[in-house]
Image (cartoon, rainbow, N blue to C red):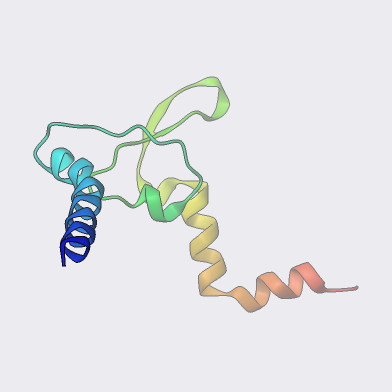
Length: 89
């Protein structure tokens, strides 16, 4: 019985550890700096996205990022992308 309780406590602690950064961020007590090409991570609510293109740093909107635009274009017309990739002409 003690072993089962220990495992349950470990699971609760593990879940708490994953939530702590998110809770701190929501309270304005933390920030995250993430370098990514993932349009999913860039979509984090209230994210401030900076572009380092063309030897300058500027803040951009999520929808302005190449990663968002490419992913959206692919999802809207994946058949066209595959035709372009595999066309033997």
